[in-house]
Length: 125
Image (cartoon, rainbow, N blue to C red; front, side):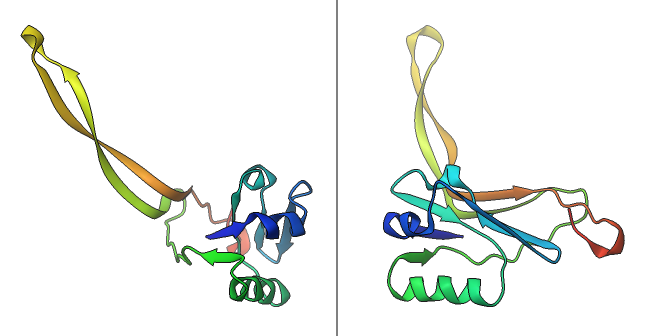
């Protein structure tokens, strides 16, 4: 999971998007994520693609936020959160006009949730 500078997004051609399949893995850049001042890219790749990201990281155009290894059981949801949770005070109207404050938990950051299914031949969907 990475934070990407707007200048690098422009160099990559954000409007076109990118998707590549390599063996059993698919990785890419979703154009919907690249419309703001910073975008998010994610994926699994080898060779030239990794070298490109490493070079941009040295130039300060890419900031790696996390490199998670997430394990999951086939058919069960797995998730990863690069961020955290905070508590937001929320005013509640009580009986007889008394107000109380409760805390509501909110997540912030970048989250990934998926439900894998193991297919024939060891492929993962």
